[in-house]
Length: 120
Image 1 (cartoon, helix red, strand yellow):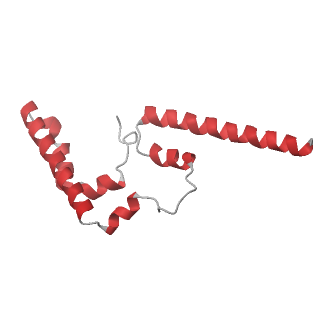
Image 2 (cartoon, rainbow, N blue to C red; image 1 turned 90 degrees about the vertical axis):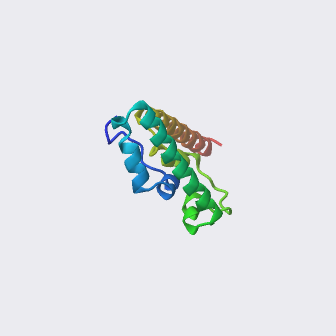
Image 3 (cartoon, rainbow, N blue to C red; image 1 turned 120 degrees about the vertical axis):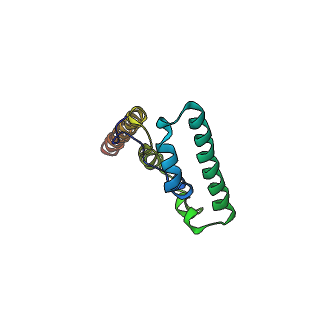
C-alpha cells in the first residue's frame, strides 16, 4: 500500500497515540518474530492506557469525537463521506458506489416530484 492509499488516523488515534508509539510500530519489520510480538503488544497496551486515561479525565478534546446530543438531522451521506477518509482503496471504492447510488436515487426522486407537480 503506498502512502496515498493509507487511511488517515482518526481523532481518537491522534489522542491516544504518540510519537514513541508510532516509532515502535515503524520498527516492527526490522525485529524478530518474538520482538514483533512483544513490541506490538506493548505499543497497543500503551494506547489502551492512554485511552482509559483520556476517558477517565473527561478531557475536553474528546468533544471533537462526538456529535452534539441535540443533533437529530444525521445525514448518512455525510457520515459515509467522513468514514471514507479512513478506509483503504477497496472500501473507498465501495463507499463511492454507495454515494453515487444515493445521488442517483435523490436525482430520480427530484424528477419524480417535479413530474407530479406538473401533472396534478
